[in-house]
Length: 215
Image (cartoon, rainbow, N blue to C red):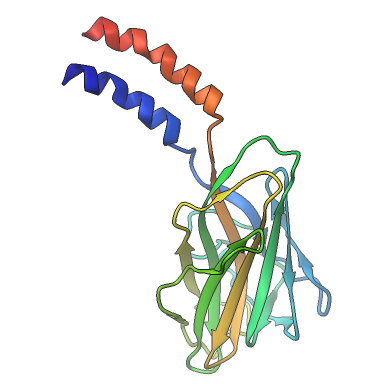
């Protein structure tokens, strides 16, 4: 049993990522017709929101957070994203990057003025198969105050199941609204940096003498 426990930290070091960080974030909806570009982006990342036929309008969430996360965002510009039907967020990760990311969550604030509104999210990597992030549609909070800069906005987050984004990859997120029109603000994609295999291996090997001494 002692031999087995000595090698447990090695396995943990090889697979455990760092804490999640914002890879791309949207909170200033400055354009009424063109695609939005990200307001926050980690090194090597860029992203756009395809507006389709939708638009921005005055209002938005003013709690200064991305969804229900503890990740603070900028306050925003007093504008929000009106969503009817579906739209996409396309994220590109530079081919010159040297590390991979394990995707963690998509956070957002949302509400609807219609009393109902179901939202679902799916994703694909490098134009591959579409994978749903929500087992069933999310029923959004209804609020007659959704076009003013005030709460309540619902705080939402959907999790990825271990999807990996490698250098040169493209990620397309598709957000679909049914039974209503949604208002969305403070949208962020988060991920965990996957440790370099060589760095993790060296760190793990350095710990082996310690466990030998304990034995």
